Amino acid sequence: MIRLEINGLPVSVEEGSTILEAAKFLGFPIPTLCHMEGLSPYGACRLCVVEIGEGDRAKLVSSCTYPAEEGLKVRTASSRVLRARRMVLELLLATCPQSKVIQDLAAQHAIRQQRFKQEHEDCIQCGLCVRMCEEQMMAKAIGFRGRGEDRSIGTPFDIKSDECRTCGGCMYVCPACQLRCTYNEPDKAICGGCANIAVPCVEKDPFDDMMCFMDPCVACEIQKD
Amino acid sequence: MNPSEQVILRDVKSIVERHSGEHCDLIAILSDVQTKYRYLPEKALRMVAKETNRSFVDVYGVATFYKHFSLKPRGEHLASVCIGTACHVRGAPSVTAEFERQLGVSDGETTPDKQFTLKTVNCLGACAMGPIVVVDGHHFSGVKADDTDDIIEKAKNGFDQVNIGSDRRIFPIGVRCLSCNHSLMDSDLPIDGFPSVKLTISFENKHGWIRLSSLYGSYSYESEFPIPEDEIVNFFCPHCHTEIIGAMNCPECSAPMVPMSVGGGGIVQICSRVSCQGHILDLSSNPV
Ligand code: FES
Ligand code: FES
Image (cartoon, rainbow over all chains, first blue to last red; front, side, top):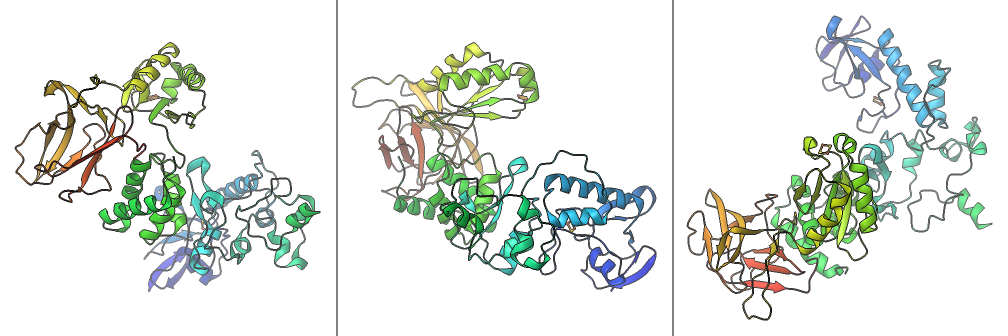
């Protein structure tokens, strides 16, 4: 067992647990976005930052990937942590302003303004879908491609993948995908985003043998008419 | 010319076989495939994935991660124009524009005749001498827009050109490295009266140069260390230091063959066993 202190409270957790798990055990909330039980930790969104160490050596780490260490002193809601978290959220909101998940998180953190240029990306590269596809669906149909600015997620060459069984797992976990808020649980669709924003592929050329995970698809039906 | 599926399958198989199939070999394998086709064809990527038991998307991820790899066919000559900050203030934009105008393609594209690929890069580490242009491993410094036609002309004719005498039974050939496209000709130390082909070799912990006669059909060579008869040596490009090794084995003694590209198109392959005279000259295949 490893003993550490979270917000001044001692806790002992099993070796190999992360700070996030330890904090959960004590009931301290840490917001997460790219973390999901059953998938390997990835540390992409940085929303789960916490502060560890003391004095000059204090630093921010992502709690979902940082292993609990003996004698570690963790603060999950210091002013530095809150500031960093709000900044992360503001940036995420600028990337994907239409995402219900991010909107909700931003609201919870009382973010009332958004100072960065809105990008309206449809991906925040949290890698949830990639891990879902590989680790739970054992398919490995999608993955990261390119790097830096050009990094994107999808199938090789954007063509229909032989491995994909159109299980929809990737869409189910996607925090940015607008289709999500009505596809799985229509009664929970409260944001109305999908009613306001056109289905993304309607205005594009037909997908043909491009990879598309929607089956049946509203956009295709609209296009046919 | 698109290589057929069987050909790719055969090539990829032999390349993968050479790298024992360990996990870390992927980059080396892709690099070899690219040397062979000058780009990474989709079919080849699929086969690499299959042969090495990786998922296609992993292989694709690596292939798109590194700038070294290209998924689009590349031309015979690769012109890289530096547009890093230092080169930019020294006038790289006008050089780039001139290259684009003269070749009629924009950044990352290949001319329709598959001669040139134009690429912009971000700093080649020689900022003080900018603007820098690299063509087939030859560096040009302080390039101005007027210099471009000269550079293109030189590249077309091949750097360090050997004059090929007309209709003689024995003729000298000028060869280049398949990987970096740098000329392998060395006029400092002629053999048989013609510039020799300079390569680096290694065998038995020894590492040194070897110079081969460029006369097709002549087997004269000089080397830094005496090479024991029957020894199979590893050949390297003295410029980019990549190992030169082909997918084929010698038809006579089954040692690996060493391919080099011949100026004017084609591939010459020589046997890596010193005493063996196996060689293949294929002027039709291009790329390999
Ligand atoms: S949840 Fe920890 S970095 Fe995203
Ligand atoms: S900027 Fe061109 S070499 Fe550094």
